[in-house]
Length: 242
Image (tube, rainbow, N blue to C red; front, side):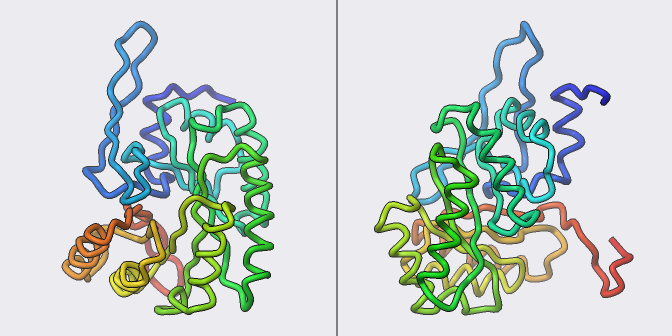
């Protein structure tokens, strides 16, 4: 397998990066041996108080631990995965890899799909926490993505509050791939969510609504993490045009 230096890794992984804390899209390249280490650009993620680099990694399609290891070496801290990514194998890969790292050197954000009952949701969350973190996870943000409003239902909000109260997770949140302004505003109004993971990119035709929603969420202390920042994916129903 050909070797890839750190600068080339960051260049190649620009499209694969799944989440950036909302801020100027810039990360300082780690120094070569012998150079002075560069200062990482960080932002505080809402009321969580966590200071994280403005570039994070979506691990969804990463099935090679060497890729995640290179990201961590480059200064990335926030790793986003989900209960269902690669049928659970993604969390397993992370859990095995992160045994090599101190628990305070990374943050895992995992997503569990909504369930009809609190018991079913918490059961899946327990599996995710045990698999991805293997007892060494610093933080976890269970969240989900559905049609507008589903994330605000009393059962799910109560379930998230229970997960946080019981210590299963330190922070809770919601993710959304569409209707982002509505979901962000609903999350802010709920007074339950700490973080929102949302699609934010130049292809969206509702940029003004997004700015307003993000501003209100920030006022409410909610941290915003952006995904799909390069507007990746297909733009037509035939899945041929990018």
